[in-house]
Image (cartoon, rainbow, N blue to C red; front, side, top):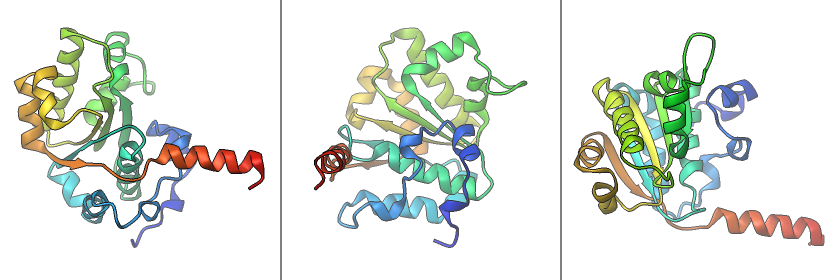
Length: 203
């Protein structure tokens, strides 16, 4: 890649709501043998075109396999190209919509989610909400899709489960604006556990 991720500052990460756990996420940490890497690579190589066309990704798979890290990698390349990005957990959306919590002096977090160049909706499916919460999620997705704004969604839900949980509207938006990528392979949480064990045991 021409651009270097180390150009990004703590300020970039904080303003994009990227948790410190993911600050070091990088494409070269994903083994080439995992097929999802080629889709992340393709997305970031053409990041400006993809954002201009409102192209999104639906990254799905089991816990700990790199969905959020992959989404953050895309965010970081968007930031390198002077685009705005924001990461929001789906289980926070309902409260953010009701509370209108501020992003800065003039804009709420929900408004930031609606307007940023690249939004990551993290962990779709873990929220314990019913009709109103689902309406908030669909409304945000529909708002961004109508404005040709790119969104990346991470989820443990398989695509075939989306209609049953969120309805035909969300399924339709996914089909129109998102490319579905199964994220499978190495369990990053197992590696993190091993690193901690090695540290404390002196291995």
